[in-house]
Every structure is written in C-alpha cells, then in structure tokens.
Length: 68
Image (cartoon, rainbow, N blue to C red):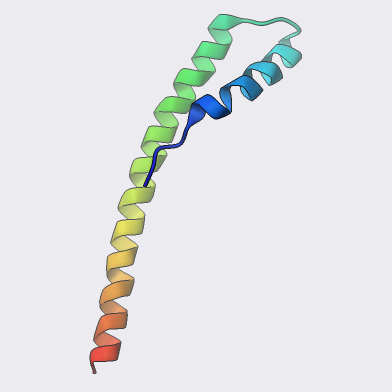
C-alpha cells in the first residue's frame, strides 16, 4: 500500500483556511497539516493491519471451502 500524498491536497487546504479566516495564517495551516499527517499515518497503520487480518481470514476460509 502506498502512502497518502498530502502534498496534493495541501494547496486546497491552504485556500480553504485562507478563505475561512480572511487571511493566510501560517501557524494555523501548519498545525492542520501536522494533525493530518499524524492521523493519516495512524489510519494507514489501522487499514493495513485490518486488511491484512481480514484478507488472511477470507483466504483461509475460501481455501478450506475449496479444499473440501
């Protein structure tokens, strides 16, 4: 699984925050980027763990069903 590329959505986030605040606030924008990066890393871990666990379960169930 490849990592989520936050660099592609950062310009959009910057524009949205700037529109909401009425000015560009680097501190707020960087805070949001840091929060997103932490959460994306956590979500990637959870997804990889869950998918690998579920894929193994599905594979073993299908394999045992076809083997019998």
